[in-house]
Image 1 (cartoon, rainbow, N blue to C red):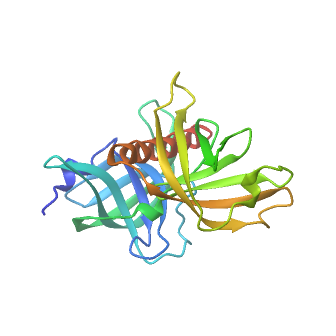
Image 2 (cartoon, one colour):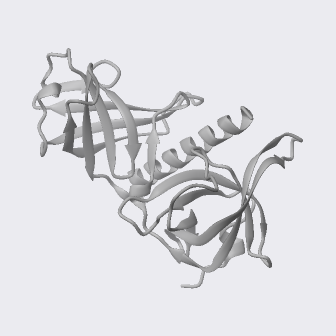
Length: 247
């Protein structure tokens, strides 16, 4: 399939800078395209958080975004390399911010990189959860805390001092869970839905006071996965804007 660069990657588009996209451990950082020169094959994008730096070690760098092609939602990517780092790129409101100039190489290709996206829950975007263990229900903030979220899983921490069944959960357990995706600037959650999660990791040495559980999402509808994708990306962009405003 032929993708037209100027109809996918254009100024104001929310994008993700993905390092080592074809590896087992890709890394993603949210960004925004500030400007594009399609003749010179150049993008100017917002510096990410964590930042892309000249001394970083990686084999590949791609710019990716979600696009709708013939009524089908796909994630597409284009290979890039940083050629300049700008500390005072001028914005429309006369403020300045950090930016990266990327030289890109065609073609644009379809990419599947679910593992690259992980959101650390922050002040503006939070995730509420309800976990069912046997006949008991446990609520986030009261019984556990959702630490981070990705397309494929959830990081959950539980206080060691709790006497509930949660601290005794074992790897392999499959549990029903309900989650609410919350943008704290809105009056109602972005979405609330049910999933099933399997415990794939238990780290009892996470800290002196807490146990970390790695939960793999094993059952989610396509519509709810869309909500998850949008929520994670919007949260990353909000954090990027917050950091940019701090200078």
